[in-house]
Amino acid sequence: MSEELLYAGKAKSVYRSDSPGELIVVFRDDITAFDGGRKDVLSRKGEYNARVSAHLFELLEEAGVPTHFLRLEGPARMRVRRLAMVPLEVIVRNRAAGSLVRNYPFESGEPLDPPLIVIDHKDDARHDPMVNDEIILALGLLGRAELDAMKALALRVNGVLLELFGACGLDLVDFKVEFGRDEWGRLRLGDEVSMDSMRLWSRETGESLDKDVYRLGTGDVLGAYARVAERLGLEM
Ligand code: ATP
Ligand code: TYD
Image 1 (tube, helix red, strand yellow):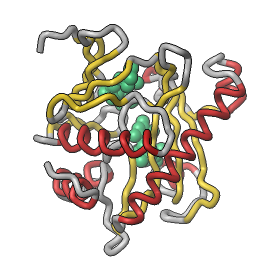
Image 2 (cartoon, protein in one colour):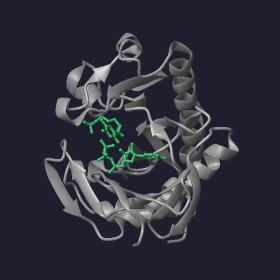
Image 3 (cartoon, protein in one colour):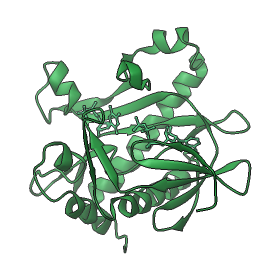
Image 4 (tube, helix red, strand yellow):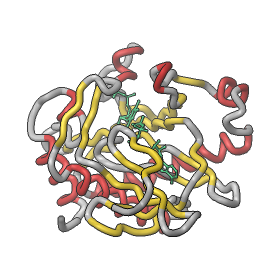
């Protein structure tokens, strides 16, 4: 690839493109868990995440959620609008799972209605601590109106995804999204929306079809990702 590498994260690489306002995101086959403590390479994982993310970004745009997505330019290569990322991980939870069950007295799978929004500060050196509104405002990461707008967007994403996955027999347990500001300062959904960043449970069997298969070491990770793509009607 001739483009200049701007940033290589744990699972994606970001390249400068031929246009200043646009970037190329390459979804790699690397998979990590436990704060980078476990790492592997799974052939074609990047393709699955890129394809599913692209599909979900398109549906979200149609539903009125501004995203960074422009188009796929190869199996694992996505052209996006360059955003000034807000260093927050916005997690929406419809059922208790993962860290919520480890850290608080919730039962695994317990419905959360209304959905919970939990926000972590993206700061690897400090292991991404959870923050609240006051900390976000005091750090100057967002203003009050922008913070409210970001949460409203995250809930709109949740509404769209709940309906979509529900129609495919999948329970959307939780997911993480990231937002950034475009060149006009408008908040847009960035990064990815994929099986790496959400929990999906099969309604028939209760099994996980997401990165928990890797975290828990319970089986065929790529097979699970392929089943999600198939349920969404995507040909790979
Ligand atoms: P983490 O896994 O904790 O999210 P990471 O940096 O390892 O962190 P990757 O997904 O591998 O994550 O890297 C992708 C990087 O690109 C992230 O830092 C993400 O915030 C950033 N990014 C995503 N979309 C855009 C965009 N449209 N413009 C600029 N940067 C973006
Ligand atoms: P959470 O239960 O907080 O994390 P853990 O992986 O420690 O159990 O995760 C909630 C959801 O958000 C889950 O679907 C995974 C996703 N997520 C990410 O994609 N990246 C992250 O850095 C975090 C903390 C969560």
